[in-house]
Amino acid sequence: MKTFFLVAGEASGDFLGAQVMRSLKSMFDSPTFIGVGGPQMAAEGLESCFPYNELSIMGVLEILPQLRKLLRHIDETVALAKKTQPCAIVTIDAPGFNMRFIKRARKAGLPGPFIHYTAPQVWAWRPGRVHKIARLVDHLLCLFPFEPPYFQKVNLPTTFVGHPSIELATNKDPTFRARYMIPDTAQVLTLLPGSRVGEITRLLPIFQETARFLQARFPDLFLLIPTLPHLEAAVRKAFDGFPVPWRCLLPEDKMQGFLHAQAAIAASGTVTLELAHAGLPAVVGYRLSPLTYFFAKRMVSVQHISLVNLLLNRPLLTELVQEHCIPERLYEATVPLLEDSRKAAAIREGYGQALAMLHPEGHNRPSAAAAAVIAKVAISSSKALSGCLPLYTP
Image (tube, rainbow, N blue to C red):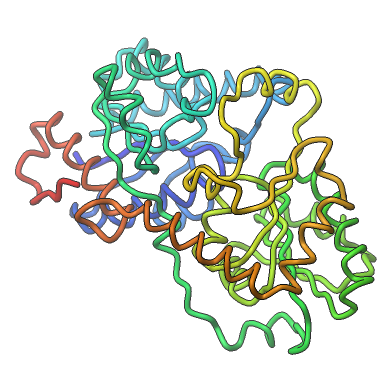
């Protein structure tokens, strides 16, 4: 049986899942994929039992109204996994949902193996979670080289497989500007207010007001707003009648948008590594709901919120958080990125240093390294799969 059960809870997990599925197809003859995922995983053949974006909730205040729905989805996912009896269960990111799912799945008698892809950020907050994760997960796949020691000290098998952002294509499409009707003389600014509804609600108005300020200084300013299919209507509505020229970009054109822009204003998250891969200088702005921020401020133990700064352990990118995330401050931080070529060059140099840390040893593609570990764990747990393929061990 070559059925893999995958569960991804948001856009970044959908991308990771699709990449791994593609690699698993090269290792197994006609594998089957069932579980929960988004459009990218569906394009690779995943049969999803409900829309993955229903799991994309962040924060104490935000999750409470959705708790009943989340618990129902956990039960649905467990029931489907039990019916499927896969050779491996791979949960991707979204630890709030996935750890609860694994706990219930084990209680329901599912043997696993359970492989979690992307380590919960115990280095940032609640380090005691390593013990719970070690009880639930059979193997952990990490994106960052500094993560494995946190879990290996509690005897959880852990592998650094590298970060998938380094696999993104960075060839400029010469037709991109014409397709989106972007003038050749335009100063292009990319706005990235997040991939969750709550992030869009909190950050987009602030980013828009910043763009108004910037247009007064840069009259030929042009905005690109990458978004996701389930958020596109809300983003377009927010920009209806907006005085600065703009275009929405769907996922397939996001990297092209980065490559053709001069600067970005972004929410923190995986996207900062994608910006680094494209060499696009950025300012990071973020806000949580007041209640979530109250708790987060007391639990978070890191000095930086963007992954680039965390990797470098220095503030390469300006970070403006909570009460500092206001249009005036974002404007002041963005102007040098559009005017000062030395500032932009220094950021690109730092990007190169950060990205160099994300390559898995002995392999060029993180998704292939991750798939190889998944295959190895699946084969070692299943007599039916023994002898299926030669394995790369990262």
